[in-house]
Length: 243
Image 1 (cartoon, rainbow, N blue to C red):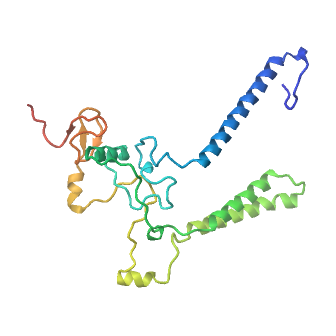
Image 2: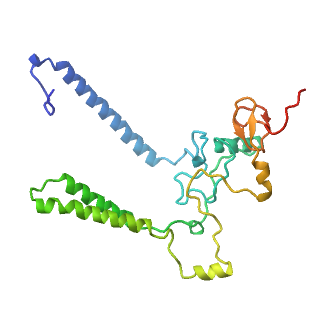
Image 3: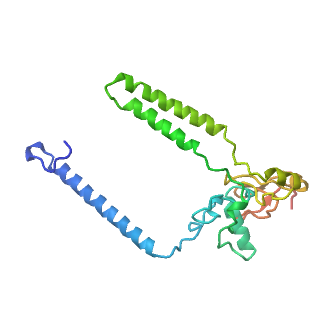
């Protein structure tokens, strides 16, 4: 069926297909219209979804929505699978359920990488490289040097980006390092899932993993009952005692 033709002769036998395509356009139009109406209504309403509207298990739902630039103020401690469910069930058992996201902190106290222009330079190089390879100008003395120039710009951007220091040096950093003042109160948390460092005295205790006798999930030693199914938790390092 040729495109961009609104009607066809009946002898082609395309009347049914033409009507089906027309009905599909109406469905798309109605869907787009409903989306625009919902967008306008949402812009006029106060936000009421909260940071965790789905009772999600992942730690990314424990922070504010939209998330802060630093994501997590400190590296979260991961005790088992579906850590946010573990924290929420524990808080509910203690009588104070979690209803608010993590408290925000001053972004200036978080060690974040400094902004960089080299990703933009690399993207410009990729654009010139791709355009030079795809666009046929008809002049070989222009067509072939353009991808080379774009590739060179891209290469320079990648090398400079890779060798750029993660954070801009400040004049007072050496003084702070010598005196101990000005230390960052929060560690940089670039990844949402990480295992937090534990005190040295608790390392041996946390090296033992407990296993739920019902669902088989591995848990930390702080659990007596499984937060997933409520089953009893067993220590595989201890001998099983018959009742």
